[in-house]
Amino acid sequence: MLKLFPAQLPWWLAGPGMGLCVVALYGLANRRLGVSGALLAAVVAPAERWHGERWRVEFLVALVVGALAYGLAGSATRLTGYPVLSAAVPGWGLVPLLAGGGLALGYGARWAGGCTSGHGLSGCAAGSPDSLAATATFFAVAVAVTFAARALSGGAL
Amino acid sequence: MSRGARASTAAVGVAFGFLITGCGFGNYATIHQALLFRSWYLFAVFGSALAVATAGLMLVRRAGTTMFGGPLRLHHRPAQRHSFYGAAVFGAGFGLCGTCPGGAVAMVATGGVGSLLVLAGLVLGLRLRGVTEGASRAGPDRVTSPGPTRRFPAVRG
Image (cartoon, rainbow over the protein chains, first blue to last red):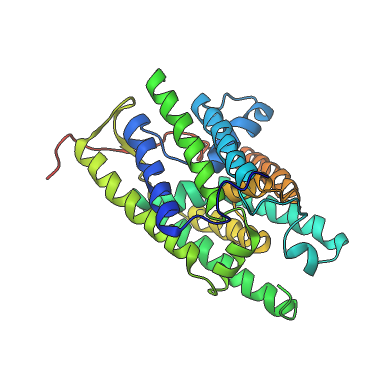
């Protein structure tokens, strides 16, 4: 890897930059930034035979390009299975855990109408009640699940 | 959608993908440490992102219009049961996998190939929720439909 970028950007650069992304997408294109909506329009819509909005598809492609740009030139990039979890959970348990966790993420995001970006960032910044409710809920549950997993795994997680 | 709006979407997508990868949204350990309240880095990232996005959207709201997308339609919906239920399921996936939809993309981009499983589960989950909604009632697609949004006048107050 090229190691052009630090393993981790300072918070005062990454945070405000992400905030500006939300502002720019609304201020320029009148759109709510959201990753699960982009995945839905790009990958799921064709299977359900409806037309996902084109900008969402383009947003997803651009997002992947941006992520790969950092990944390819970032100094923390290395091929791994699944950090920490793959060491703590035996192989036969890891596959259903990851696929099941992903399933919950997708099912819940569509049910709630957004994810960390659409609700947590864009919707909360817009002051939308559903986003504030969803964000408080998923964060509280994520913390509870994390502590529960830590207790059940005897501190391995 | 105008050419300007499409170009903005692409530019914001690249920037957002770059930043979420750079700040460790794709790093299991980073998210895990945050969910255990052992590191404040992600809270600083998310808090500053939210602060900048909220302040920026206030300015866009005051302008009332967007550069390429017409009069501003900011996401604004009441909190309903689905906001809580969906977010609770999403939060469980968040806690189990230590990632979210954008984070899963970032994780693959930084070499965490195990996250492909999460992404596969995520797409399946999005689809499954569509099946559930289609079975219960032919409801609107909450993630993609514009829905009831609040229109802001050019000058408020």
